Image (cartoon, one colour):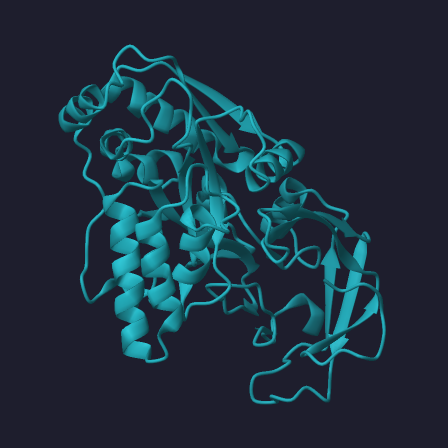
Length: 373
C-alpha cells in the first residue's frame, strides 16, 4: 500500500505520482481482540509512477530500471491486448488467466512467464451444515475422492496448475515441508466416494450448495459435475463477484449464520515460503482461522501448538508435515489445485517472478526495448 508520493521510500523505488491504497474493514473472528482478519477494497489513481531509489540498501539486487509506471486505467482484458499487440503501451500484465496463456505464448510482442506460486485453491467445507453429513470424516473424504483433479487441471485451468495433496502447494520452496513423509493427492475414485457418502448417510440429502469466487467459475462447475456424477447428489452453484465474495468472507470470519453455501471455493496464498503451513492451515482449520466453518478441532490445535514451539528448522519441517497430513487425512477441506502465477511480459523485458509477491527490483530491459531505441 502506497498512500501518497513522498521522499520516505526505503525500497528499490520511490513513489513520485499517484497512490495505491487499500480501504480495510476489520472482521472479528472471536472474543480475542487480536483474532481478526482484514477485508479490503482497492483504490488506485489511474496512473502511478515510481522512480529508482539511489539509496536502496541492496545495490546488487537493484533497482535496474529508472522508472516504472502502473496503468490502472485499463481493464485486465485491455492491458493484455495492448501487451500482446503493441510496443510501448504495456510491458507486464500480472495475473493472466490460464485461458489466455496460449495467446500470450504465440504473441510476436510478448512472452509467457509462469511460476509455481505459493497459492492453493481449496474448498472450505461447512462441517456444521444442516441436513448434510459434512461433520463426518467419511463424507468429506467422499467429496475429495469424487473430484478428478488431473482433469480439473487439464480442462478448467488449461494445465496451468498442479493437484493438491493437502493444503500446502507443491513448489520448490515448499518441497522440504512435503518431503519427509510424502503423500499423494486423493485419487479419483467415484465408487469408493459413493460408498463413503452412503456410509455417512449422505444418500437422499438435500442439494449441496457450492459457491466460488468468479475467477474460478470453470473450476466450480467442473467440481459440481464430478460431485453429481460420483455421489448422485444435486449440486447448486453460485459464483460471487468481488463484493459478494467479500461479504461471504466477512460472514464466515464472524461466524454469522446462516451461510448461503456448504462448500466455498477460494484461493489462499502464503506470504512466506519458510512456513506456509502457519498461514494456510490456520486460516482453514485453526481456532482463529478466518475460513474455519465448523467446530474447533482439538487434535489440530495440539499439532499447531507443537509447530509454533519449534525453533529448529528440521523440527519445523517435520511438524508442518504432520499438520498437513492430519488435515489431509481428516479431509478438513476440499483439496483441489495449486495454480501457477502467470505473466505476459514484453519480449525485451527480463522479468524474474517470485513465488509469493510481485517484485520488480531485478527487472531490466534489453537494448531492443522501445524505451531504449
